[in-house]
Image 1 (tube, helix red, strand yellow):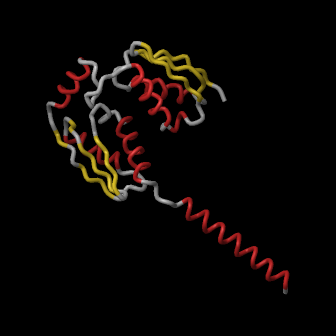
Image 2 (cartoon, one colour):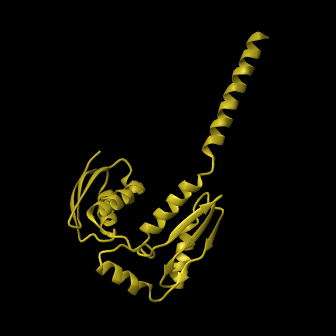
Image 3 (cartoon, helix red, strand yellow):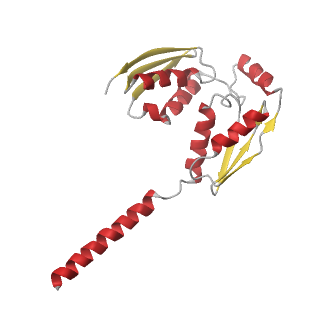
Length: 187
């Protein structure tokens, strides 16, 4: 009888532990985590990355604001913001056909899409942020150096696809004039 009680108690403890683990695995991401994930998706999507789209998250509800050039870009931004954990998306983006002209003028003046000055430190930080969030680069060891708007990538990536992705992400950053690829493929 005592052995049966001990077995029952052990089984209950294992079940309780599994329930706690299951609950921890299904916890909703925080608003800050959702904001970061949505911003990353917008910043790395070819259709909308050049626009200054602001993201706010409150209790899982995403609000997008800023300007884009077309209705299709506005719709794409909303689609990209719909990720796991987001309860709804309020799309307050304004369609401004002159937005591309505004962005071109900022770039000529050495400013990013938000109007901030682009320098080597800003580029390096942005490239590193892009690479941190990319699944193809998980487990990679990449050093990013920027001099006179030229990015040099050194280190190792796991696959050829990861190498190509690292170079592509670096090229997509505002202000980058060239990317020097010194990455190697290794485990």
